[in-house]
Length: 88
Image 1 (tube, one colour):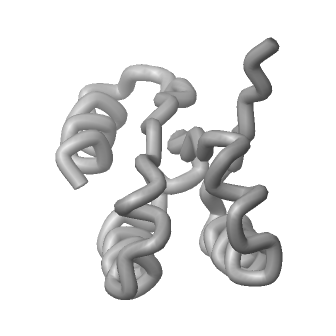
Image 2: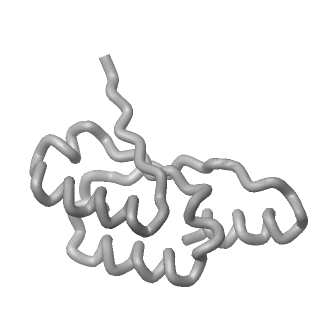
Image 3: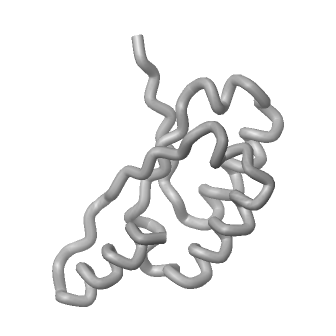
């Protein structure tokens, strides 16, 4: 939420928005209230959402593919960009 607040203030100054990457831990992604909180943020900070790229570890998406696919779909529908970096 802090990132969204700061980004909103930055844009209010007339500056051009830019993408900010936010790492999402396994524990946060799997937390039962994660989607509830994210939906609340999306509702409050609608204009800033498109500037946020959520970075998920490959491990998150591999552990529970069905759940991960559902959550990622919800995040994309809310307007977030999603990144799943692969590390060699």
